[in-house]
Length: 291
Image (tube, rainbow, N blue to C red; front, side, top):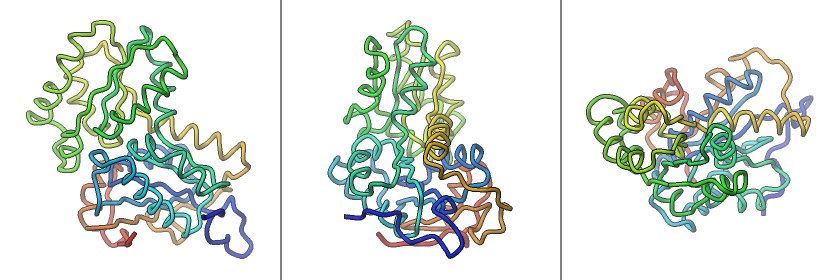
């Protein structure tokens, strides 16, 4: 089993100078990368989207764990100092496995930060979670929320069509609004005390407007991306792994210190990924890799 951070730092550099690895089943995790870059402007990143095998949310836990380990191995092989599992499904079923396989590399998922944020945001303790089928089936959000607030009432809803809408760029308008209403209107109507909804898939933040319209103003939406970035910052500080100041875009890492890897269709990754990252991605900056 891998027991290192992969390739050694270049001569004259340290482990702190290595990039942070981020992976997701596709482009949704770019919302997490966006938050990480905002919180850590001096860090370099390698992002891998397993676009050949998405979505993870409809696959078995065993398959997701195998895919997640394969993706992580590619990033570890490139030389990273910390791994962020930006996929909710992989975080829910494979995080412990990845932490054991790649120890002592720090491995951070998006479930626990999102759950902690939800517990802090809910006054009533009635919390909704919308996610993929795999994340809902695994129950990781419920366990994480109740570890913080044992008396919390948690309802989870699988909203698989949101992934397809986000991937197609149909993030607003009548179609997105109709799907959100179908998934969520009855849930909220039947639970008048529900005051917080976790966007438990990295694809879902780009559908925030349609989701907010379906649940109404009394329900606060929680996106785990920013909370995950806070956890990463804390981990780097505690481990003395924070990078020193660098000049962005001048380290050979492509767009503002990010290397993009995809397992299929780099041009589509660049086109759709721009919606999630919030800025254009040049197709030539996306490297095709085979897991």
